[in-house]
Image 1: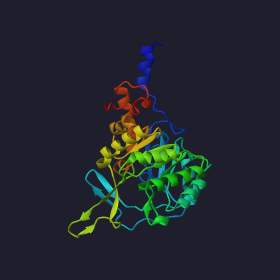
Image 2: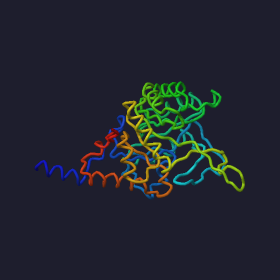
Image 3: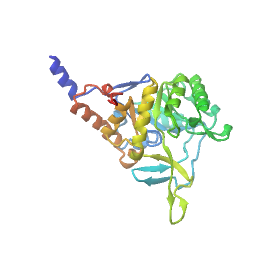
Image 4: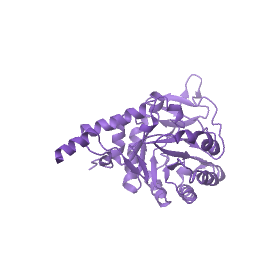
Amino acid sequence: MSKTQNKESAMVSPDLSIDFAGIKLKNPVLTASGTFGYGEEFAEFVDLNKLGGVIVKGISLKPIKGNPPPRIWETPSGMLNAIGLENPGVEVFLRDKLPYLRKFDTAVIVNMFGYSLEDYVSVAERLDGVTGISGIEVNISCPNVKAGGIVFGTNLTSAFELLSAVRKATKLPIIAKLSPNVTDITAFARAAQDAGCDGLSLINTLLGMAIDVRCRRPRLANITGGLSGPAIKPVAIRMVWQAARAVSLPIIGMGGIMTGEDAVEFMLAGASAVAVGTANFIDPRATIGVLSGIEDFLREQRIPAVRELIGKVDAG
């Protein structure tokens, strides 16, 4: 077969595979934590085998009931949520949720969090070496109750100490999910790299608020919540681009991805993979649509492998 024929063949089925921090992904499309449950909730709509990976809803050491309602409010081009990280706890997850995900040929990344350094370490130790878990996404956007409520992810020292402790607690790949509610995202990206993390997730939700002007009360019982959806995409892309220039870690880009071209933007900015979040609430098959859009783009542009997009933005 000639070189021309080889290239044309590649265009029919571009290579979508990605090696992310040692995790083999068949394609770069994952599910953002907190928007896809534990996989089973969406299995009626999405063949989980077709996804690059599932990042499950956040898991803590003990069960958490979450915040009182109302917990979600739709905003222009997005949504506010203050679910409060409701989850059944790590033991129930391992016993009742993970066995279902083991049935599928897809990477499973467990998002985890806590309210003290000890909480994080305990969860990481419990997940270490468990069959069916490909990696851990560490949500550091939580208040450290032992330090007066300071958020781990907005204090460089706390973030470094926390991620370093989690790194020591497990041999699994560690992906730090960074808070965007900071002045300089590159400083936190460097802290994560220095702490021994294997990858980054960018971005978590932006802090926001909405008010019912007639009742003169906040729309959320928690008063403030996390803003997600297309409204935050330009901020997310900017932070991915900055972080990718500051560190050598691979990045999962997220924040308002609705289409394949949205995902391509993140990859051009420096992301190696992407996570689809709020779009899942609008269309339960959004992940498959994004994946198809990426593949269509590669064919249109005659790009043989999705890896060739990573960090290729021409920013002058």
